[in-house]
Length: 303
Image (tube, rainbow, N blue to C red; front, top):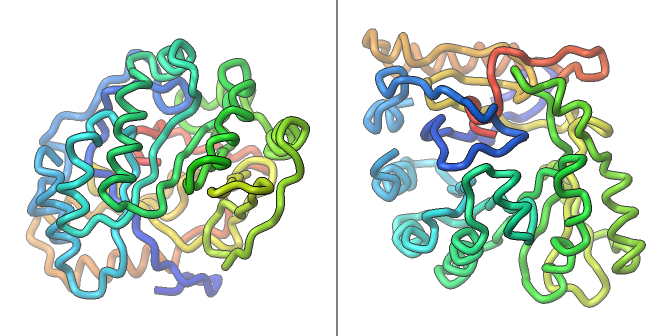
């Protein structure tokens, strides 16, 4: 589907739950209250528009026209799930890992254990999920000193390491804006320690333009949502766990699909709602004009 600016919106990101066994400082407040399960899309409703994740992935893979399924995860349970997910159609994973220091990892996630995440990454590699993309949200005062160590992973592993500027959302937006580490600073830190970043061929669709360290097996990418927005090439939309279609991560405009779905809307009626939402997709996120989405924190959207 094309929006009113001619962008082909072909990438749908589905959030299976707003719950998480971490409480990352950039994603949600420490005292986060999750939505009742009755407010969320159930398994059968999800396939019309979690805990049986393997069946959900297999059901989506069976839908005609689906080219690729990828999953974003904290990898805490991935050690056991990687192989079953790969067998039913999962192709690749995006894994959050903000530091390689166990103490800082626990400080950032408030609950997480780094060794479990690391075992999940290795299990994904053994299961043949490729490429493995590792995401690090860089937060001033927490993990900016870990950038070089994370970048160094690409020298020995054929992984895509991506560094992300923290994005202001919801009730913790003020903290987030004060915590932004610009991509330019990230690159400078890496090049000062590990040498020049070499540009890699890029099709322009992925927001993280790839680079490589000399002799490296993997790539490095940088997502500069705040300092260098890439809205002109945005090709994605998100379906939240409570059935809202969100056309821009950093805008509050949403299309409610859950209410009409539960009221018996036909596939054609749901398709019309989605099409109207895509047509009205905003041009950009508006951070330059100090427009900040306030209705949700990141965990409620799904990243």
